[in-house]
Length: 60
Image 1 (cartoon, one colour):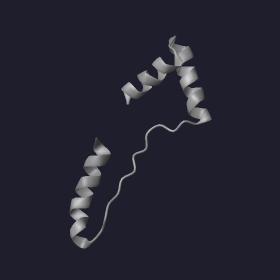
Image 2: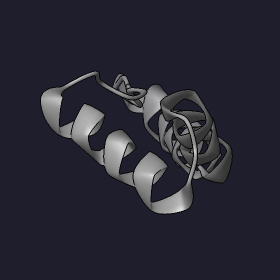
Image 3: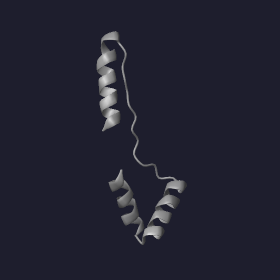
Image 4: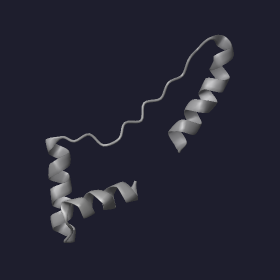
């Protein structure tokens, strides 16, 4: 995962100087827009909502 690798490398470089590095990598957030996107993805591909959401997660 690129973000983790970058954060670890940066942390290793900056730790001797007393600098802490954090990374935030949120997962999906259930919002109205997200639900609408999943609905469109399902409809456009002939999938159930669950299949569409799984397909999206698999592609990431």
